[in-house]
Image 1 (cartoon, rainbow, N blue to C red):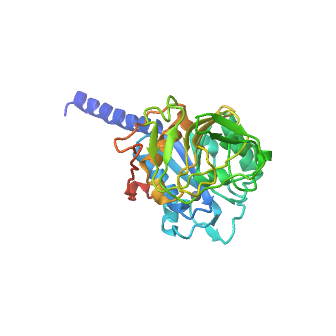
Image 2: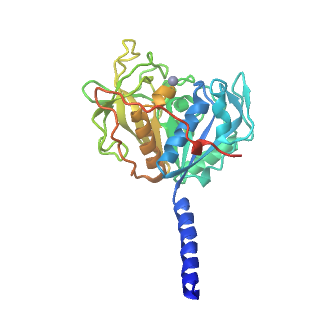
Image 3: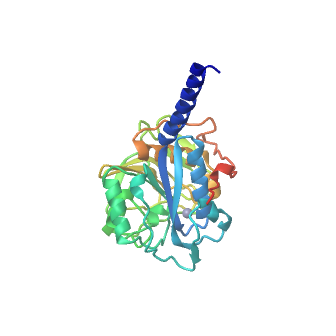
Length: 331
Ligand SMILES: [Zn+2]
């Protein structure tokens, strides 16, 4: 090779290395947090969500987990895939004094905690509030809206929640009527209920929001729980979609909030009540709304498309989860 050719060759190599570095840096950074959830699917669902996010090519995903876990046994094969080192599964949830994710490193934080999760250390709560106030992104999945009933800022972030002795002191019930009227109902009573798992219809209420834009007006879930009677501050909250329990044992005759967005400080929250077990999380409706909601919480925009296999008004759609090698973390 002549000198000039060698020179061009090295320029090309260094540009290529630089470009690869640049494309990696341009990925959104997501953090899934978990460890204590009454839903024993959690070690698996964390890995499912991580893989879904990575398969878009838009996210790098880390996992942070409490050192004490609860109900980690059913899906224990998935525990090591998180790459978080050794954890200890206990009979009851226990607070982890060392749980302190570096929230500020991330564009979006996804909670896979659930009912009865032990409270975070105060300094971790404060760090999370600061992260959100400064413009962070948060995604609450299924029973994550059961967590931390005593934590005022958390209740504001999720908008509405259930169980954990929540009641009228937390704020109104929020729902749609058959006539399509949005109601904030201050009547007294407990929060959180659901009928048996079944396939039910989701109705889009805000078709022009970036997360729901382009979705069919109604679409079917796979077998899942239709959360009902959620209540909370519901401030700066927009209900994007509702669902009606048609199991025959519905706790209400209302159209219950299913997908929501909440503004908290300068931050953005996406809240989905869907995702009870692995077959619920394999729903293309769950996957698509989760991915678009997570992108929106991270950036305020959505570029992830509605896929061809998205469910219709009459037909659920499901993708069998297969672990891909990139979901496995070496550590
Ligand atoms: Zn559930």
